[in-house]
Length: 89
Image 1: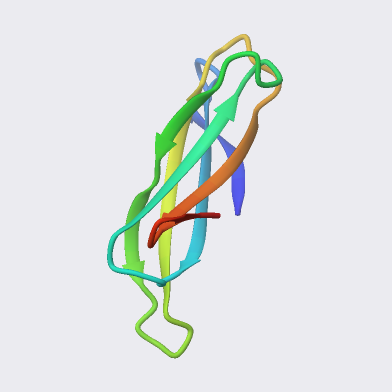
Image 2: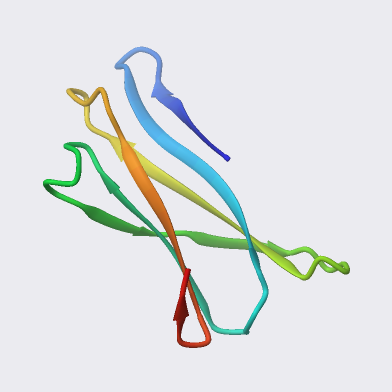
């Protein structure tokens, strides 16, 4: 899930907010968001924050991210990266 939210309706500042679930395939895991404002000419990376474990048969972990969007931007592209047990998804 992802959407663009206002930080301040007075200034028009915005941020990209998202949540995602990943399979709990190992204790040590890394979830990042690679994003760009100019069709991948420049790219940035943001580490998602772990929120909680599902504690049920699904065995999932929930993460979230908040990425500030500059004023003059009208496009955001992003991909999610999940690293666990030496593998990247």
